[in-house]
Length: 312
Image (tube, rainbow, N blue to C red; front, side, top):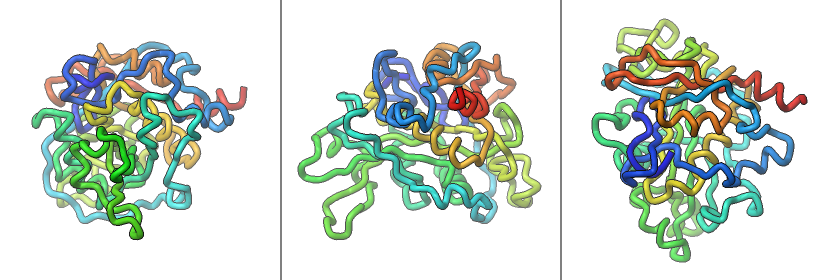
């Protein structure tokens, strides 16, 4: 995906775009020979390179819909993620030169990051595609452990590109001893759980206020084993640098190790299938989801295949 038109929509359609209009974002496009930071885990034997999984066909990106009343936030029942190190900073030698000076690091997102997430989302996508603040509030309160951000630190010595990022104003101080040092969100991946193997329109909606968390058929379903990715967005100025694929690889590694799900599912435009195929996803054909007019393709990354490749 490139820094151009949105690859998908915010909610469930993973945002990504083809390199054309550097105003929308999503999985940025990376050349086949580009070595992403996360390959550190591949070389260390922790996680196979997704591109080596030989997916059947192309696939993927996700949509969303207008929110309804939000149920009161509840904490996730999953504790495995809570005990994991939330940061993943690949060794310097494995970081592509295109983003090495950014010193990127990934970290689980929380409700305190909502302003940066909204700013990033609205910068990358037009209003009718961007995820609403209500949905961010719901997802970051209900299942923040399933949402990951790629950050850089902004200091007086930081590259001008970082200091000019649209999310600098909403960044939080990361070191009390250095109040001028801020964590700047460059990309995010927002997800919920679903009982469906592939994303449906209901998965993109907010639960009705009268539904309990366990009875809801819309929105996050804690007992589900499929991770429904609603947004994969990269600030336009940072696209085509490998950040999108780096973030996805870090996310896959984390989710596989935590064993909180069996697969990742998302929706995308047909033209973006190659991007996800390269990341190890399989094309599951056209989606029945009608969000945004339809025309979506299902993309699924099965963790069983990922684990099997590790045993080879």
